[in-house]
Image 1: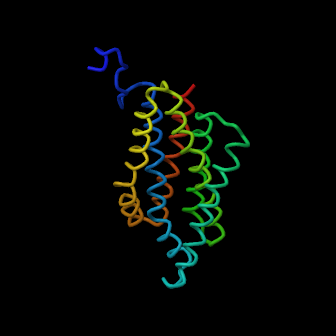
Image 2: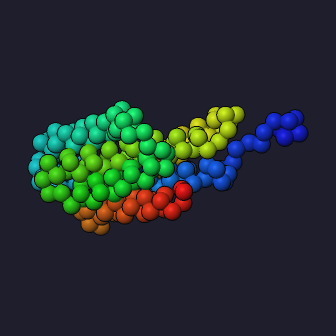
Image 3: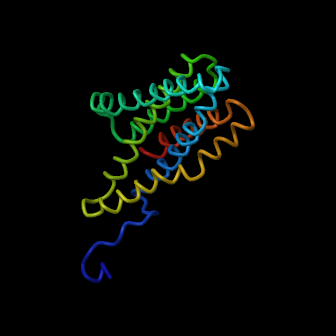
Length: 195
């Protein structure tokens, strides 16, 4: 109907302009959601402290991650002026290194540093894929792509936290090693796919 009235065709999920950005968002979002779902368990098990004492350490690790994510978005992105492709690529690499480090850390300082590095990576990655999707379409398609990006941001929180718990049940660092591998793969895919 829109095309018959002279309007543009509606933006589709399979549109080749936005599809790679949405795939990147879904993949990276699953990694972040899985890691967030089990970071508290990892702090409890690594520090071997009673639950009532573990809460303060969980809060400190989460605050380190939140601070690093804000630092990436408020300071690093404006300072470095990276393109959306570079944000996804470097954000994925940092997230991979950080999640590997988090999963292998044995001290609260290692957990804080690893999770902060992972969060900084995710703090670069998310604006990269959202801006890449937005810049890939025309002005009259911005509402549609914004809805797609919002959906992509929510999709990972349906199953990824539960999957992270299942992996955690199979072995202590498994969710973090799997997330690191996923983000490393995403970085490689980004380097090859977005040229």
